[in-house]
Image 1 (tube, one colour):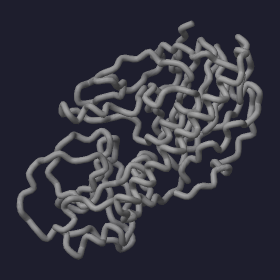
Image 2 (image 1 turned 90 degrees about the horizontal axis):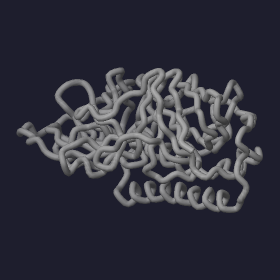
Image 3 (image 1 turned 90 degrees about the vertical axis):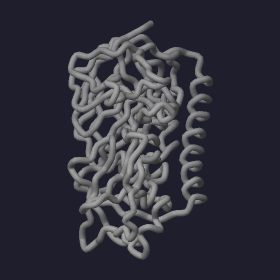
Image 4 (image 1 turned 120 degrees about the horizontal axis):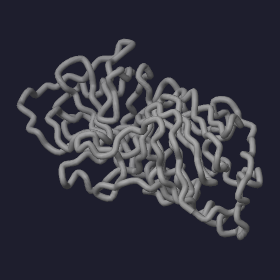
Length: 350
């Protein structure tokens, strides 16, 4: 049956997905979840498709009630996640019974938490995506008392209902920290910076308060210096990739993220890799960034490794779902899990 999720505390949240890959061809932003890895993992944990809509929660507290029994998973930054006050683990699926409130509070270290549902969120789409587009005014932030239609999937007994952590650790989240090491490949204009290009990799940069989904603004700290362009010819407006590291005149770097326009006219010194972009989606203003120079083969290998982990999780969850024929009871209390502080169960490096 169709249910409803009602927002009781909106914070800064929206319904999104992986974005519209076809957007650039018609001059529109790609958009979508800024931490693509966490979004993919959340949907995989509840046997949803990779492109399924999910809720992105940014920095502030969020809460919602449901009229349907839902299997959900929350990934992304560490937070205090509860169902009717009962602590629940992130990065594994759990039971959200009808009539209860799910809360996400005290998001820390990172910026974004992703809430995925086993089933379908009924939201409008544009060019094959539900991701908000601030230029066109399509979709937008959630507000208190907004409702989202949800069609639960065929819920079956597994994992959280039994209280057995059969998928715990199946995918590893990033190591959340106050300092991020971000891999970048060389940009098309690196040669224009001559010997000073190495400065991008020789110091730390701090994320500014005016950073958002369109791009991050960073300033050098601790003796770091900005690269200096040696050629001063005009740079024509041209297509730029997501992750472009631009060096405008002034005292900061710009990194274009998923909300960027498709053209720009600043020199592009480097390009953040796919795995680095997800990390930047979690980096908070005031945190520092170190840019690590990598080659294209290394960048591609890292992206494939992340995707392989998600694919492996998808297969594992599918086997678990098909292995149990009994349906989850119509009503069930949330099963509490011991929740370690600050993701102490996670051991991967940043």
